[in-house]
Length: 130
Image 1 (cartoon, rainbow, N blue to C red):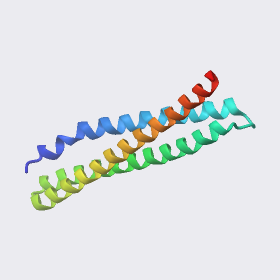
Image 2 (image 1 turned 135 degrees about the horizontal axis):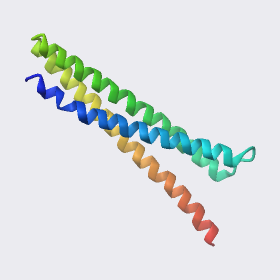
Image 3 (image 1 turned 90 degrees about the vertical axis):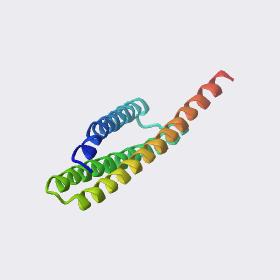
Image 4 (image 1 turned 180 degrees about the vertical axis):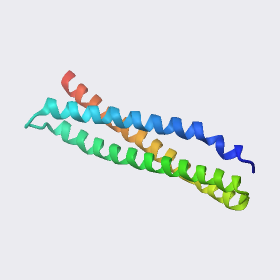
């Protein structure tokens, strides 16, 4: 394995972390708007959304943590290869791939929960129609 192999992950991990941060910022803004809109009286629909939002924020935090861990391990892998500790570099790179995979799996689960949030909203709209 050469130094360029782990370096190939740098753009991918950077873009993932940017996407995760954008998801976090959107949720934070949504929570602030929800808080301002609801005031002191909270509707049952909002209670369901709060639980969903809390779960999604925690998932995004874990996604970011595993993405950063993958980035750090990838960097350490490159350093190990640079100082000619190739075996250690290969192991660190493999572990970084595991961290990246975990981050992506958490992202997939967060998307699933996001779809549940949309379903809650759609159910509320359908109730208004009837």
